[in-house]
Image: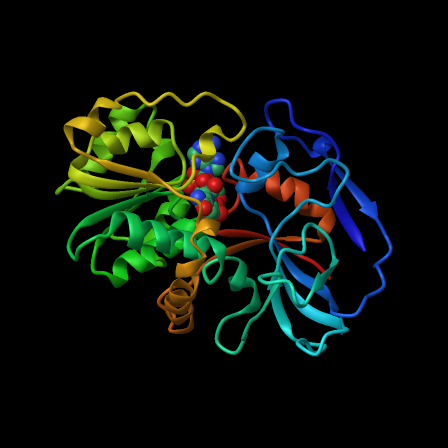
Length: 335
Ligand code: NDP
């Protein structure tokens, strides 16, 4: 069972040297346990925060242990009547090829149906990132039909689900993403009404002009994934009583300071800004997953994936995610 451990904590930017490849025996099963063979590992931006030894909503990742992370796979061995060999399951198996889970522990494993939704999508559009988009849009932004909603990191796992959910509510959906190729894909494949390449703009004032063109009626709701210059530019185009769902600030995850240039606009525009952590809202997951599963099964949401091969490739793929080198949901294909 090949695993990736956190070997030491980053000083500034995370590097491949923070991780260590370890090979261990697959443990023998006890009553009530199942052995899961992982098909895919999910790489997610929140993992960067856990690499630090800092107070946050999640416990730091312990050193010398398997990196935590979401996985999908199949039951390879079972000592529980609840699971049969071959069942497809989602869990938190971590950065390794196999994991052992307790069948009776609530939330440890969830059986999934792959008839209409490919297994890997349960880590993306029909999983935690999709539910994240759903919560921010439906519970915080609460858009009315015809309103303009904007999302940053628009082609990523969360952003792409956000676009489909916003279009399903007849909103004008505008994306912000890094690069012409990502923006083309956002409009042509994901259904965004427009997408702006922030990399074409040297400062917030210039980006803000491009946002004005894409959002002639101003912005009613903003789903923030990035922070920094992008947030400043969007803030300049907010309508009165706009809502900001503060989901992520990936531009600052490596520890760079991220000053907010125009906080007074929150006041003058009477903006509601709310941060949230999706795992603290388990009550909405069934409803959100149902809608997201239908969007994928009916082809209204066609999420893209970037797939690295083998557990050894996980550290580099993860560092790439923090630089925008992924295009869509970043996964690692395992055995
Ligand atoms: P993505 O699939 O969107 O991948 C991350 C993307 O962020 C990159 O592709 C890149 O897109 C962009 N990015 C990376 N580095 C930077 C940077 N320095 N400056 C600007 N943009 C950057 O990831 P997810 O969809 O999984 O996550 C999106 C956001 O949602 C993250 O901030 C994450 O932390 C947050 N999140 C929050 C949750 C919560 O409960 N609050 C739950 C899940 C996710 P591009 O090339 O377009 O810039």
